[in-house]
Amino acid sequence: MSLEKLARFCFNRPWPVLSAWVVLLAAIGTGAFIFQKPPSSAISIPGTPAQVAIDQLAKTFPNAGKGTGRIVFYAGKATIPDFQPSITSGLSKIAGIKGVSAIVSPFVYSSEISSDTHTAYAQVQLSQQNGQISAATLDAIHQAIQSMVQPGLEVEYGGDLINNVPSKILGPTEILGVILALVVLLVAFRSPVAAGIPLVIALIAVGGGIGGLFALSRVISVNSTTLRRLQPALSKLPERPSRTRPARS
Image (cartoon, rainbow, N blue to C red; front, side, top):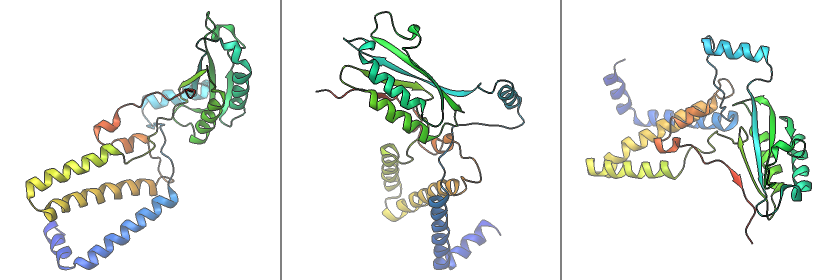
């Protein structure tokens, strides 16, 4: 069937075609809601020389490629030993979190404390591969880090402790882009209906595509970059490292 015949078919049967689209979109939305699975940052391309080398490295050195991160403490005018009970308690909580295989306290190795005793760091070893760290593990670690914060002690973290998966698809940038597109279409077509039709079609197409991806996310692996490719270029800017500071009095 040619596109002309398809267009005539849809034009001559508007309500059945619209009803079919509504049913299809409802099915996609329901499937995305029920079967949605968080996207992964892991990238695997089976059969390529690089992937073969990575797989062989994982077999030979099981701990290679595991996630790691650092927690940095800054005591300001005080010293790190002044906050040892709080830091030790927080690190003990992190050590008991599922997904954390080891943690090295700055009070175990003196090299992890600066010579002026104002700054120190703790090394966190995760049991999951880089890019496959679960959100539950990261959330539990962040809560434990928050428990160590107190007046006079700043705590920051980095490495694989930062979740690089986008937390939201729709944001102010996307909304602004839709508004600007509508303004351009209104100027070009000088008709709200003519300007709205291509915009509505585009929104339905993008929404249906994203919904279809999430509906199949338990069957196929959805990478976090898939969603970023659907966002404007400004959305691809790297996020600032997360940091936690004590509240000012």
